[in-house]
Image (tube, rainbow, N blue to C red; front, side):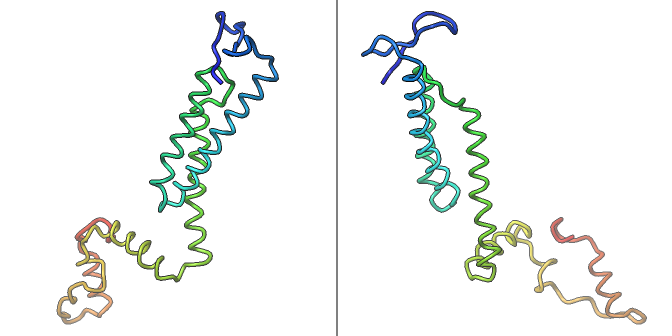
Length: 168
């Protein structure tokens, strides 16, 4: 139902095209229904985006909820401000995304999926493709010189500047 605002300022009367005016209870009831309808879309979209796999499905749902809330606010209903909604649902989205890590830590920390995707992604990001100085495939240490032990030889090799900053 579309509402228009008659008069100016805070003292204006809200009118409906069918009834001519709304009581406070009717206005509050319709505002609550509009906010709940928007929240259903926002929560579902946030939950899908929090799975990271179905994020592409969740984004349009989330945007539909924002559209419904903005539409209700522009039609004169008393709904939550958009910025408050965005901040609140960002917190919920962060909790959904963190639950993936918690679940993997508690239940699937030795699974193949965890080892392949999360560890490999971390190695890729940390090493930046340069594995000559950081991995076990590093070149053999230089020939031992007289008077130096293996530990000293290893320390001098590690003390030389690394090929990338992530090897430190």
